[in-house]
Image (cartoon, rainbow, N blue to C red; front, side):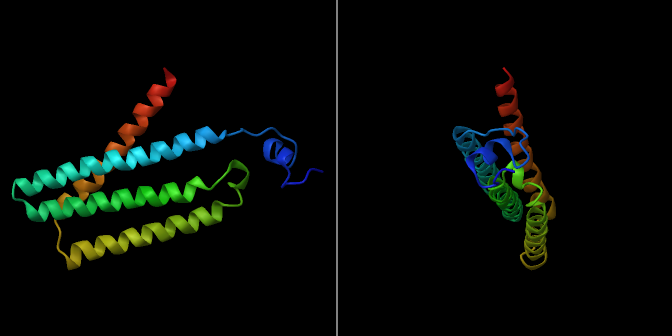
Length: 150
């Protein structure tokens, strides 16, 4: 039986079945993509906030900014949670990911309640900030996926 901590076990797995080998540069590419996605989505969000502020809709600008920040924070927490996982630890780490997801959603819920009840930001603007940021990130992911196909 192979040792789980040996280099051969890292490549072949504990039962001798071949695993997908993820080279280091692929992990760097993923980190670069995550940073680029955060940067582009933040730029789109900032443009929306500035545009609403220039038009004089301060309550909408504040709601939009809160929505963008929640969406970017959520994406950042997801990237941090998933980046340390490897294929063999996925089964063992499922409980950790589940608890992390529940904790992340609880934090988002508290921030949303505070933003809506205490600071009285605009709900449609907050929803627009969440939606536009998510759509930006999905579009960037699709562009990357289509670029890798060609």
